[in-house]
Image (cartoon, rainbow, N blue to C red; front, side, top):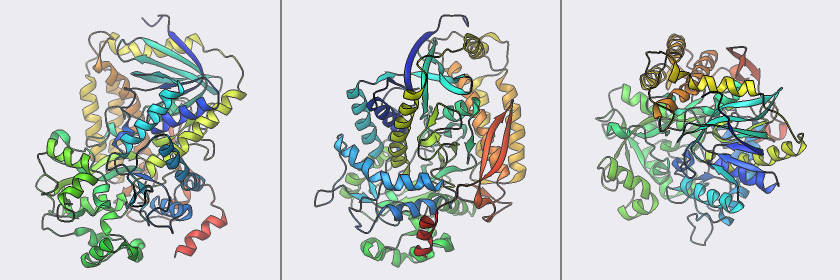
Length: 600
């Protein structure tokens, strides 16, 4: 079967991934007049963007007129522990308002203030209420809007197509090789420019908010053709995922619950977050429950509740409470909105959360607290890109959204993901189109390259192996959950690398039965390559960063080290081996640096 004639399509720009970043990139590339295709692993509209419930962060100033891009930039850099690419954070803060207004012009129906402007809510790490939202279904509304706009533009869409390798001509990317999930037949896409918008890596962990598509495909595709990855040690564990029943463990509970007044409590009924306010935040954070209640009723005091500290701080506090024996019956803590808001307000402001808990856990959140705990949620690390153009270190390759590194530094603030998608999705589409226009009119894809990829894909059917892909995946998730989780140390990270080497060897013995049609076992066998690649990258980068910063916590190096505050950990392929190095951060200009001095 490896010598079959491959179905082939040729475009100027192909976009791999149809979430917020991919859709916005495809819309922009098409608007620039180049032939554009959108390729998605699942069905159009089922992107992981729909899981982003709380809102899209942008300094519109509709609730607090004093909000502006400089404050948003400063919040983003502080949340990322100053490890962000400053230029990406600047562009993001400056351009997010225009992208939100653009979504509204395209039909997004945001909640409104009393005078008819876009309403904004509080979220962790943001000094002002700046998250534009649609109840707790913001990501769904964003995807609906972008999807309808893309279809209206006539962009070609290829659904249920998994891309397994990128193609190169010389040193530049020139397309992609994949297969149709329904038939198993191979398909080749030739392109002058490739945009990666494939999302994250969460399915390598046992407890995750991520859906089945999030297997690190884009990270592995870029790594495979020699692109740099940065910040892979920073994996965000969202503090509030469902913990009960087991069938829904890890499903996201939006930060909007806390943004609308929900409070975290331990089994003793204590609001424990007051015990975990870092010194860095004390000047801006309520220090007593009475003060926090006063903050909530009179926000002009501009004092944040500790329940809305950045996600890494809250996740570590929850883990500490559970380890101290003050957790909930099913191994989490309690999140209470019922005592803070009336039932009708909860149902109106948090409709998805109300139905999610009612239907999945038989909990009425208007009357009872929710049981929540940390869940693997987001990868700050990803493909190293140029801030202005989103170009990767391989010519012809671009990346935007969660698959791209640099924007969020050591920890992402809630709401910054959705604005990241549209700000850099637009830039990826724009600059990929410009690159395509400058590229030569024709190019060839080496037939030997295609044949080798096809043979590799079909090996699980033909080898006499003794491994089941589901067993290997289960053991990978256990390894990452236990050894490369929220709190890490050198011994466990080295053990993880040893186990990953064994798992890689076991992957080489994976055998699947049946044929290529409707074969989920084969699909998982393909995904294992990506998950093992990104898992090794995370473990090696985490071993290299000998400090605790943001979402990366080393119990053997519990403090931030100023030396590591000046470098990115870079992962790249050298031959068949994974290389790890430290490289200096881009220097922030003085005018931006002064913003932090003024804020003190």
